[in-house]
Structures are given as C-alpha cells and as structure tokens.
Image (cartoon, rainbow, N blue to C red):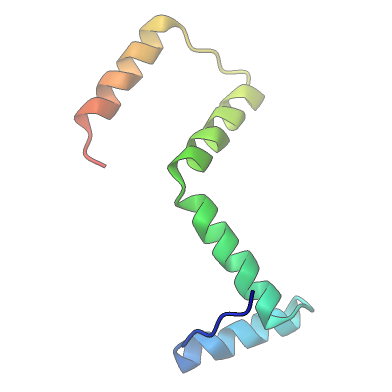
Length: 78
C-alpha cells in the first residue's frame, strides 16, 4: 500500500542516512520502524514478550506471586 506522509526535514534526512547505511530503501526503513513502534505499544505483544522472557529465564510463579502481582497492577494507573 502506498501512503503519503509529511516529515520534518531533519527526520527525513536522518532516515535517509540510516537507510543508506543499512543498505535498504526508505520505504523499508519506515515500514520496519512503524512495525516496531506498533509492537512496542500493543499491550498483548508486550505481555507475550514478557511471558516469553520469563519462561526463557526459567521463572515460575505460584498462586501467591500471581495474586500479589495482580494487586500491584490493579493499584497502578496505566
């Protein structure tokens, strides 16, 4: 899909330099950057990533720790 966007000159120039250094097109750079941004701001993706990291680290949670974590999350404003 083709999309037209407006960018400040300094961001355009920096993106152009990075794309050249990475030997990729600006379109590919913008696509990768947007995909990464969307993943970082998708709550489900963040949770899945954290769960995977915990699994890889061999962390196990019992009921007590799950309830304690839930209480902390419920009290915190997002």
